[in-house]
Image 1 (tube, rainbow, N blue to C red):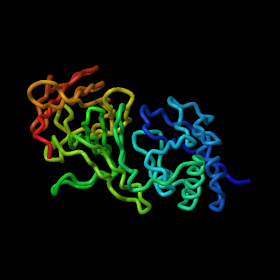
Image 2: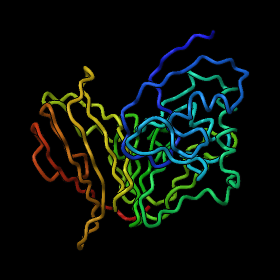
Image 3: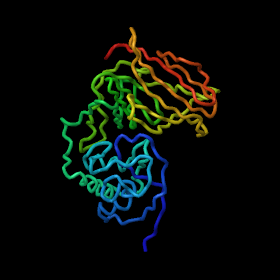
Image 4: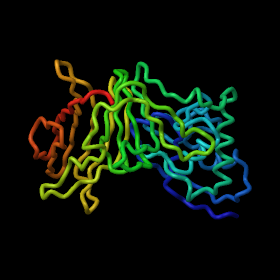
Length: 316
Protein backbone atom coordinates (compact mmCIF):
# COMPACT_ATOMS: atom_id res chain seq x y z
CA UNK A 1 0.00 0.00 0.00
CA UNK A 2 1.43 3.36 -0.96
CA UNK A 3 1.61 6.05 1.76
CA UNK A 4 -0.83 8.91 1.64
CA UNK A 5 0.31 12.46 2.39
CA UNK A 6 -1.99 15.38 3.05
CA UNK A 7 -1.16 18.85 1.76
CA UNK A 8 -3.05 22.08 1.50
CA UNK A 9 -3.44 22.37 -2.26
CA UNK A 10 -6.01 23.97 -4.48
CA UNK A 11 -5.21 23.53 -8.14
CA UNK A 12 -7.22 26.07 -10.09
CA UNK A 13 -5.86 26.62 -13.62
CA UNK A 14 -8.25 29.44 -14.53
CA UNK A 15 -8.15 32.72 -16.43
CA UNK A 16 -9.20 36.04 -14.93
CA UNK A 17 -9.42 34.71 -11.37
CA UNK A 18 -11.01 37.45 -9.28
CA UNK A 19 -11.79 36.78 -5.61
CA UNK A 20 -9.43 34.11 -4.30
CA UNK A 21 -11.19 31.60 -1.98
CA UNK A 22 -9.44 30.17 1.03
CA UNK A 23 -7.30 27.08 0.30
CA UNK A 24 -8.90 23.76 1.24
CA UNK A 25 -7.46 20.46 2.36
CA UNK A 26 -6.94 18.04 -0.54
CA UNK A 27 -5.69 14.51 -0.12
CA UNK A 28 -2.61 13.93 -2.27
CA UNK A 29 -1.36 10.43 -3.01
CA UNK A 30 2.32 9.92 -3.68
CA UNK A 31 2.42 8.49 -7.20
CA UNK A 32 5.17 6.98 -9.35
CA UNK A 33 6.66 9.22 -12.03
CA UNK A 34 5.61 6.88 -14.83
CA UNK A 35 1.90 7.36 -14.28
CA UNK A 36 -0.07 8.86 -17.13
CA UNK A 37 -1.18 12.45 -17.50
CA UNK A 38 -4.78 11.35 -17.03
CA UNK A 39 -4.09 9.66 -13.71
CA UNK A 40 -2.03 12.63 -12.51
CA UNK A 41 -4.88 14.95 -13.48
CA UNK A 42 -7.49 12.85 -11.65
CA UNK A 43 -5.28 12.72 -8.57
CA UNK A 44 -4.31 16.40 -8.28
CA UNK A 45 -6.63 18.48 -10.44
CA UNK A 46 -10.06 16.90 -10.80
CA UNK A 47 -11.25 17.94 -7.33
CA UNK A 48 -11.38 21.55 -8.59
CA UNK A 49 -11.77 21.17 -12.34
CA UNK A 50 -13.87 18.02 -12.60
CA UNK A 51 -12.92 14.62 -14.01
CA UNK A 52 -13.96 15.71 -17.50
CA UNK A 53 -12.33 19.17 -17.29
CA UNK A 54 -15.70 20.93 -17.20
CA UNK A 55 -14.91 22.98 -14.06
CA UNK A 56 -17.38 21.03 -11.92
CA UNK A 57 -15.13 19.54 -9.27
CA UNK A 58 -16.03 18.09 -5.89
CA UNK A 59 -14.57 21.02 -3.92
CA UNK A 60 -16.84 23.94 -3.13
CA UNK A 61 -15.10 27.12 -4.35
CA UNK A 62 -16.30 30.71 -4.06
CA UNK A 63 -16.16 30.93 -7.85
CA UNK A 64 -16.32 27.85 -10.10
CA UNK A 65 -13.12 26.84 -11.85
CA UNK A 66 -13.03 27.75 -15.55
CA UNK A 67 -13.88 24.86 -17.84
CA UNK A 68 -10.92 23.54 -19.85
CA UNK A 69 -13.44 22.32 -22.40
CA UNK A 70 -14.17 26.00 -23.04
CA UNK A 71 -10.43 26.78 -23.38
CA UNK A 72 -9.98 28.28 -19.91
CA UNK A 73 -6.22 28.89 -19.74
CA UNK A 74 -4.57 31.77 -17.88
CA UNK A 75 -1.23 32.13 -19.69
CA UNK A 76 -1.68 30.56 -23.10
CA UNK A 77 -2.93 27.34 -24.67
CA UNK A 78 0.32 25.58 -25.55
CA UNK A 79 1.57 22.58 -23.57
CA UNK A 80 4.61 24.65 -22.59
CA UNK A 81 2.43 27.51 -21.28
CA UNK A 82 0.17 25.17 -19.30
CA UNK A 83 3.22 23.38 -17.87
CA UNK A 84 4.73 26.69 -16.79
CA UNK A 85 1.50 27.75 -15.05
CA UNK A 86 1.21 24.39 -13.29
CA UNK A 87 4.81 24.58 -12.14
CA UNK A 88 4.82 28.24 -10.99
CA UNK A 89 1.21 28.79 -9.86
CA UNK A 90 -0.66 32.08 -10.21
CA UNK A 91 -0.09 34.74 -7.50
CA UNK A 92 -3.27 36.29 -6.16
CA UNK A 93 -5.35 33.19 -6.90
CA UNK A 94 -5.85 29.80 -5.17
CA UNK A 95 -3.50 28.24 -7.74
CA UNK A 96 -0.28 27.17 -5.94
CA UNK A 97 3.02 26.17 -7.54
CA UNK A 98 3.35 22.43 -8.14
CA UNK A 99 7.07 22.33 -8.91
CA UNK A 100 7.76 20.80 -5.49
CA UNK A 101 4.87 18.31 -5.74
CA UNK A 102 5.14 16.92 -9.27
CA UNK A 103 8.17 16.04 -11.36
CA UNK A 104 8.86 17.82 -14.64
CA UNK A 105 7.70 14.69 -16.50
CA UNK A 106 4.43 14.58 -14.54
CA UNK A 107 3.80 18.29 -15.12
CA UNK A 108 4.34 17.92 -18.87
CA UNK A 109 2.12 14.86 -19.06
CA UNK A 110 -0.73 16.47 -17.14
CA UNK A 111 -0.41 19.62 -19.27
CA UNK A 112 -0.70 17.51 -22.42
CA UNK A 113 -3.80 15.83 -20.98
CA UNK A 114 -5.37 19.16 -19.95
CA UNK A 115 -4.63 20.57 -23.41
CA UNK A 116 -6.57 17.68 -24.96
CA UNK A 117 -9.85 18.69 -23.31
CA UNK A 118 -10.45 21.41 -25.90
CA UNK A 119 -10.55 19.19 -28.96
CA UNK A 120 -10.78 21.97 -31.53
CA UNK A 121 -8.25 24.30 -29.85
CA UNK A 122 -5.37 25.27 -32.09
CA UNK A 123 -1.91 26.47 -31.12
CA UNK A 124 -1.53 30.21 -30.75
CA UNK A 125 0.52 31.74 -33.56
CA UNK A 126 2.53 34.96 -33.45
CA UNK A 127 -0.21 36.86 -35.29
CA UNK A 128 -2.84 35.82 -32.74
CA UNK A 129 -1.13 36.76 -29.49
CA UNK A 130 -2.31 40.36 -29.12
CA UNK A 131 -4.82 40.79 -26.29
CA UNK A 132 -7.48 43.34 -27.19
CA UNK A 133 -9.58 45.06 -24.51
CA UNK A 134 -13.17 45.38 -25.61
CA UNK A 135 -16.21 45.78 -23.34
CA UNK A 136 -14.66 44.41 -20.14
CA UNK A 137 -11.32 44.99 -18.39
CA UNK A 138 -8.55 42.43 -18.92
CA UNK A 139 -5.70 41.42 -16.61
CA UNK A 140 -2.50 40.10 -18.19
CA UNK A 141 -0.07 38.43 -15.78
CA UNK A 142 3.55 37.74 -16.52
CA UNK A 143 7.08 39.05 -16.59
CA UNK A 144 7.30 42.88 -16.77
CA UNK A 145 10.25 44.20 -18.83
CA UNK A 146 12.33 47.16 -17.59
CA UNK A 147 10.50 50.40 -18.34
CA UNK A 148 13.73 52.33 -18.90
CA UNK A 149 17.48 52.01 -18.50
CA UNK A 150 17.43 52.54 -14.72
CA UNK A 151 14.63 50.05 -13.95
CA UNK A 152 14.83 46.29 -13.50
CA UNK A 153 12.83 43.40 -14.90
CA UNK A 154 10.02 42.21 -12.62
CA UNK A 155 9.51 38.41 -12.85
CA UNK A 156 6.00 38.79 -11.44
CA UNK A 157 3.80 41.59 -12.65
CA UNK A 158 0.43 42.36 -14.15
CA UNK A 159 -1.20 44.84 -16.50
CA UNK A 160 -4.81 45.93 -16.06
CA UNK A 161 -6.39 47.11 -19.31
CA UNK A 162 -9.65 49.06 -19.19
CA UNK A 163 -12.14 49.62 -22.03
CA UNK A 164 -11.39 53.36 -21.98
CA UNK A 165 -8.00 52.73 -23.59
CA UNK A 166 -5.82 53.15 -20.49
CA UNK A 167 -3.79 50.37 -18.91
CA UNK A 168 -1.98 50.16 -15.57
CA UNK A 169 1.32 48.36 -15.06
CA UNK A 170 2.05 46.86 -11.61
CA UNK A 171 4.83 44.91 -9.99
CA UNK A 172 3.24 42.31 -7.69
CA UNK A 173 6.13 40.95 -5.60
CA UNK A 174 5.51 44.11 -3.51
CA UNK A 175 2.47 45.69 -5.18
CA UNK A 176 3.16 49.11 -6.68
CA UNK A 177 1.83 51.00 -9.68
CA UNK A 178 4.77 51.54 -12.06
CA UNK A 179 3.30 53.20 -15.13
CA UNK A 180 0.09 54.26 -16.83
CA UNK A 181 -0.22 53.65 -20.55
CA UNK A 182 -2.64 54.56 -23.31
CA UNK A 183 -3.42 52.78 -26.56
CA UNK A 184 -3.08 49.11 -27.47
CA UNK A 185 -2.79 46.61 -24.64
CA UNK A 186 -0.45 43.58 -24.56
CA UNK A 187 1.07 41.03 -26.89
CA UNK A 188 1.60 37.63 -25.30
CA UNK A 189 5.02 37.06 -26.84
CA UNK A 190 5.80 34.79 -23.85
CA UNK A 191 3.43 32.13 -25.24
CA UNK A 192 6.18 30.80 -27.48
CA UNK A 193 7.62 27.34 -27.02
CA UNK A 194 10.81 28.60 -25.37
CA UNK A 195 9.05 30.55 -22.62
CA UNK A 196 10.68 32.93 -20.18
CA UNK A 197 9.96 36.00 -22.32
CA UNK A 198 8.54 39.23 -20.86
CA UNK A 199 5.17 40.57 -21.89
CA UNK A 200 5.27 42.92 -24.85
CA UNK A 201 3.42 45.98 -23.57
CA UNK A 202 1.98 47.91 -26.50
CA UNK A 203 0.54 51.03 -24.88
CA UNK A 204 2.51 54.26 -24.86
CA UNK A 205 3.53 55.67 -21.47
CA UNK A 206 1.52 58.68 -20.33
CA UNK A 207 2.49 58.53 -16.62
CA UNK A 208 5.73 57.11 -15.23
CA UNK A 209 5.42 56.79 -11.45
CA UNK A 210 8.65 58.01 -9.82
CA UNK A 211 10.60 57.17 -12.96
CA UNK A 212 9.23 53.63 -12.96
CA UNK A 213 10.75 52.69 -9.59
CA UNK A 214 8.37 54.09 -6.95
CA UNK A 215 8.79 53.88 -3.20
CA UNK A 216 6.08 52.34 -1.04
CA UNK A 217 3.20 54.74 -0.40
CA UNK A 218 2.36 53.07 2.90
CA UNK A 219 4.32 53.15 6.16
CA UNK A 220 3.77 52.54 9.84
CA UNK A 221 3.24 55.52 12.12
CA UNK A 222 7.00 55.34 12.78
CA UNK A 223 7.83 55.55 9.07
CA UNK A 224 8.74 51.91 8.39
CA UNK A 225 7.65 50.78 4.89
CA UNK A 226 4.81 48.28 4.69
CA UNK A 227 4.94 45.32 2.32
CA UNK A 228 2.03 45.00 -0.14
CA UNK A 229 1.08 41.39 -0.91
CA UNK A 230 -1.23 40.71 -3.85
CA UNK A 231 -4.59 39.21 -2.88
CA UNK A 232 -6.68 39.20 -6.08
CA UNK A 233 -7.88 41.07 -9.13
CA UNK A 234 -11.41 41.73 -10.33
CA UNK A 235 -12.57 42.54 -13.86
CA UNK A 236 -16.33 42.41 -13.31
CA UNK A 237 -16.79 46.18 -13.21
CA UNK A 238 -16.10 49.08 -15.56
CA UNK A 239 -12.56 49.41 -14.24
CA UNK A 240 -10.20 46.60 -13.29
CA UNK A 241 -9.58 46.34 -9.55
CA UNK A 242 -6.47 45.13 -7.72
CA UNK A 243 -6.59 44.02 -4.09
CA UNK A 244 -3.65 43.57 -1.73
CA UNK A 245 -2.81 43.34 1.98
CA UNK A 246 -0.28 45.45 3.88
CA UNK A 247 2.14 43.77 6.29
CA UNK A 248 4.61 45.27 8.76
CA UNK A 249 8.21 44.07 9.27
CA UNK A 250 6.97 41.43 11.75
CA UNK A 251 4.62 40.05 9.06
CA UNK A 252 1.50 41.31 10.82
CA UNK A 253 -1.30 42.29 8.46
CA UNK A 254 -2.27 45.87 9.27
CA UNK A 255 -4.59 46.73 6.37
CA UNK A 256 -6.39 45.48 3.27
CA UNK A 257 -6.44 47.67 0.19
CA UNK A 258 -8.60 47.82 -2.93
CA UNK A 259 -7.73 50.22 -5.74
CA UNK A 260 -8.58 51.12 -9.30
CA UNK A 261 -7.62 53.92 -11.67
CA UNK A 262 -9.59 56.03 -14.11
CA UNK A 263 -9.05 59.19 -16.18
CA UNK A 264 -10.71 62.35 -14.91
CA UNK A 265 -12.77 64.76 -16.95
CA UNK A 266 -11.80 68.40 -17.29
CA UNK A 267 -9.39 70.72 -19.02
CA UNK A 268 -6.27 68.99 -17.68
CA UNK A 269 -5.57 65.32 -18.30
CA UNK A 270 -5.31 63.54 -14.95
CA UNK A 271 -5.45 59.92 -13.83
CA UNK A 272 -7.21 59.31 -10.52
CA UNK A 273 -5.98 56.38 -8.42
CA UNK A 274 -8.81 55.55 -6.01
CA UNK A 275 -7.68 53.62 -2.93
CA UNK A 276 -10.05 52.12 -0.35
CA UNK A 277 -8.35 50.97 2.86
CA UNK A 278 -9.65 48.74 5.63
CA UNK A 279 -7.16 49.39 8.45
CA UNK A 280 -6.72 47.46 11.70
CA UNK A 281 -3.65 49.40 12.94
CA UNK A 282 -3.15 53.12 12.18
CA UNK A 283 -0.80 53.70 9.25
CA UNK A 284 0.43 56.54 7.06
CA UNK A 285 0.03 57.09 3.33
CA UNK A 286 2.45 59.38 1.52
CA UNK A 287 2.09 61.05 -1.87
CA UNK A 288 4.73 59.98 -4.37
CA UNK A 289 6.81 62.46 -6.30
CA UNK A 290 4.74 64.16 -9.00
CA UNK A 291 1.39 63.15 -7.48
CA UNK A 292 -1.22 64.89 -5.34
CA UNK A 293 -2.82 63.06 -2.40
CA UNK A 294 -6.41 64.04 -1.61
CA UNK A 295 -7.07 63.36 2.07
CA UNK A 296 -5.09 63.15 5.29
CA UNK A 297 -1.75 61.35 5.44
CA UNK A 298 -2.68 59.53 8.66
CA UNK A 299 -5.05 56.60 8.07
CA UNK A 300 -7.07 55.67 11.19
CA UNK A 301 -8.53 52.30 12.10
CA UNK A 302 -11.59 51.51 9.99
CA UNK A 303 -12.48 52.07 6.35
CA UNK A 304 -11.05 55.11 4.56
CA UNK A 305 -10.75 56.31 0.97
CA UNK A 306 -7.82 58.27 -0.44
CA UNK A 307 -7.41 59.60 -3.98
CA UNK A 308 -4.11 60.16 -5.73
CA UNK A 309 -3.92 62.28 -8.88
CA UNK A 310 -1.31 61.68 -11.58
CA UNK A 311 -0.72 64.33 -14.21
CA UNK A 312 -0.25 62.90 -17.69
CA UNK A 313 2.75 64.26 -19.52
CA UNK A 314 1.81 63.36 -23.07
CA UNK A 315 2.05 59.95 -24.63
CA UNK A 316 5.61 58.69 -25.13
